[in-house]
Image 1 (cartoon, rainbow, N blue to C red):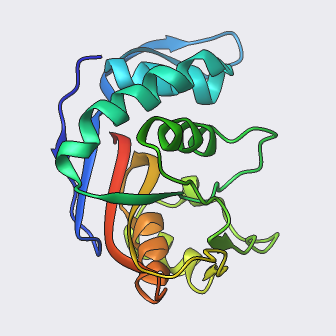
Image 2: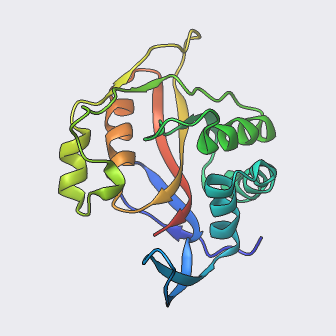
Length: 196
């Protein structure tokens, strides 16, 4: 895949996104139900991620994991484990978790999907994707993440935190904040497939 890697800043030691999600989106007019339709062009990574998340094309997991496996070791030395960002919405199969599992196999490191626990939002809370500012998202995520100490071996490791899309960075920063307090974590690296 062709990528355009960009550094992303936050409360982690180093972070990157592989490519922009949407290159161009032009309104085409409304459909018969009155919903606006768009002619959307995505990057290669963005299109693969879109097909995976919204079209259920699980064949996209391997090429996305391979792209990460090809690019990340030279950017992040000594990755010791991978932590996928907990999903916002329930799905029987979670795209980020599937990619993290495949990537971990390729890198020969463990993936821990339960180290960072996310408490569900209150029923009356707005969905995170419907919030527009970082401050709104931070407020919605306050005290929702915690650590589950499931690493049984001694030592400290560099962790790769994996997510699909970088927007404001509020979710990633909330996850990294709790990981900073976990005694078994040394450096925190962040990688997302795309940025908004």
